[in-house]
Length: 548
Image 1 (cartoon, helix red, strand yellow):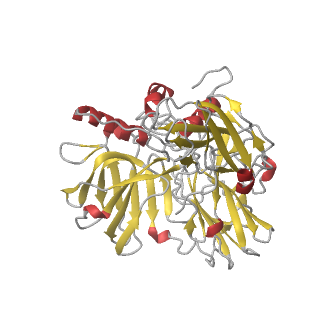
Image 2 (tube, one colour):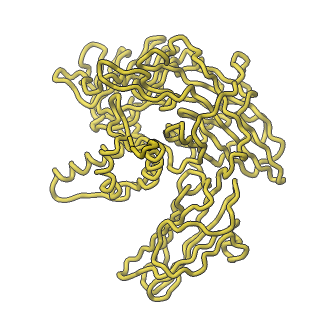
Image 3 (cartoon, helix red, strand yellow):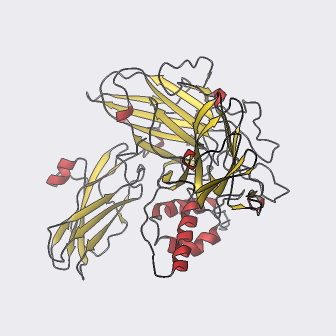
C-alpha cells in the first residue's frame, strides 16, 4: 500500500521555515507539509511558520513565488505568481494572486521571509497538484446497479439496512511507456481501489462522508508506478455502503433512534489519465464497458451493525488481469448524486496505530473474551484456525458484566458484529473493510480452541493527522485524564467529529465540539478536518438560517 506522493493541500499549503539566529540565513532547517488531496480552487491559500531558537525573531515581510517547474522557480523566471516583497507579519492563509491555475497541472512554490534584522530567509520548494477546475474535465460516467441483487438484502420497509458490497473491474491496454498517471475517483459510499492487484493508497473509508445532496468528494492519486509496461492492466474497485446507504431507514421504536437519510445504492466515478513518455495521453473512464457483480464475499456491511464475510464467495483473482468475469453483469449508467463534485479537502481515514490485546479468557465453553487493554476505535484483525462453513463471530463492547460477558445495554440497537465464514478448514487471516467498532472487549465464538494474544491486532483508525501537542506532569491522575481525552477525541474523528463511535448514533452534534474544538487543536493537527466540517455545517443550514 502506498500514499499519494504529488498532491498538496486543497486550501492550505504550508511551509515551516526555521533559522538558528535572528540575523543569520545559514544553518536553516525547512520542513514542508502536504496532504494527499487535490486542489480544485483558483485561489489556494499559503501558510508558513518561522521557527527559531533565539528570541525576538519576527517576520517583517514575505515574498511568495510560484512556478510551473523546479527550474523556473530556482531561476525566478517565467513565474505564474510573484507576490513581490510584501511588508507584513502575516504568515497565514495568504491567497494566491497569480495567473489562472490550470486543471491537472503541478506547481512549485517557495516563500522568502525577511526578519526584523533585514535578513532574508528562503524555504525549500514545495509543490501541489491541481485536480479538475471544470465539470467538463470529467469524461467518466457514474456506474453501478441501482437495485438489490442478493438474497438477504433489505433497505426499504426495514429499520436495519443490509446490502452486499459491489465489485467492479476493467481491463485495458496501454500503447506506450508510461511517464506518469493520475486517478480521480469517487466511490460511494466507500471504495477500495486496486491497480494490477495493488491498493492505490493506504486510505480507508474513502471518500470522507458529506451531505451527498450538497457536496460529493473525490480523491486524486499518483498511480504511474502501479501500471504495467506489458498489457493488459486492470483496475478493480470494491464499493461499501458507508453513509450513502442509510444505516437506519425507519424509526427504531425500541431505542428511539430516528431514520437517517438514504441517498441511493453504491456507485462509482473513476477517471484514469495516463501520460506516455512520448507526450501522448490515454484516458480510461468508468462506463458500461466495466463489469460488476454483487455476489462477492462481503455479503453485508453497515457502520452500526458490522461486516459479514463469506469466504465461499471469494472472487479469487478478480484483482488481476485475465480473471474470467463472463458471469458478471455489464455496469449500468446510474444517476449522479445531487451534490456538487469537489476534490476532497481533508485527508482520509487511515490506520494510525496498531495495538495488541493484553488478555483472553474463556467465559463459557467456546466463548472467549479478548481484552485490548484500551478503549479503541477501529477494527480487529484476526489470524485464527477455522472450520469450513462454521462462522467465526466477533462482537464488541466497551465494558463487561460482573460475570465477565459483554455489557451491551449502552450499545442499544447497533449489532456491532463481524462474521467470517471459512470456505475450508485451516488458517483464517481477515479484517473488515467497510465498518468499524468502538470497543475495549471482543467476544469470539466459532472456534474450538483457546486462541493466543498474538492472533489478534487492533487497528486504530481515524482521520490522518499529526499529534501536535502532549502533556505530562507529576500527577498521575492528571496524566490519565489527558491520556483518556487523547484516546476519546481521536476515536471520534470519523471524517467529522462525532459524539460517540460505538452505539447506533455516531453523529456530528454541534454542541459537543463547539466546547471542545479549541482544546483539541493543542493536541492534534485537525485544521483540515474542521475546515471540512464547517462545509458540512454550511451544507446543512436551512433557508431560514437555522443550523440543525
